[in-house]
Image (cartoon, rainbow, N blue to C red; front, side, top):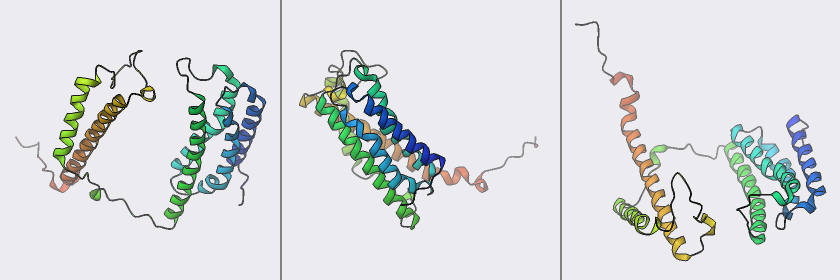
Amino acid sequence: MRIKLDIFNIGIFISSFISFIITLLYFDNYKNGYNGMISFPIIYIFVYFVIFMNLRRRRFPFTIYGIIIVQWIRFVLMPPVLAVAGEDVGFTYINPKVDSLELSILLMIVEIFTISLFCMFWFHAERNNNIKTFNIDKLYFSGNLYVYILFILFAVGIILTYGRTHNLINFIYIPLEADRLGDVRDTLLVLARQVIIIGLFIVFLLVINMCKIKYINVNIRMYNFDHIKMYNFTQT
């Protein structure tokens, strides 16, 4: 692995090193459950110089640099900020359990490795021309339309009869007495909420499919100027 000493790579290394030092100095300030974040800067340095650094010269630079910057914020900037914050981390009304925090940190580590490996294989295949051109005509929404409509009506019925009384779906504002999505533990409430969410998702897919069909049917007539009737406004 050959490391190119440009400004971007040097900035990544220095910022990650400073982040690790600050996190190490303020490690005792971490609340219980956040301790695993001390490894974030080291993990980011490893992933960047092994995978992301070699992808910077590939196509789609906005995608690559977007992933690099987002992961830098999460793995380099966030650990020292939370370490310095100490007991004031988070919001007063959000009190996650220690097990949830430790699981979240573990999943973040798994996520960055998964994303980096996916990018490596994806752009390697793209360089070798193994990716076929996407054709919108081959993209369609399959299934029985009447079954989808029945499911949507069922979801609407749950919203009107059961969802409104239990604050399962809220628009524009969230009442203070409403539970957050992750706090609902009752099996029936979770099932009802999932039915409503799936119904909304199906509505979204149906609308997108209708717009796609409409676009395919009218785009030729709309953008082909040979078929546009020209009028002579100089005639009386």
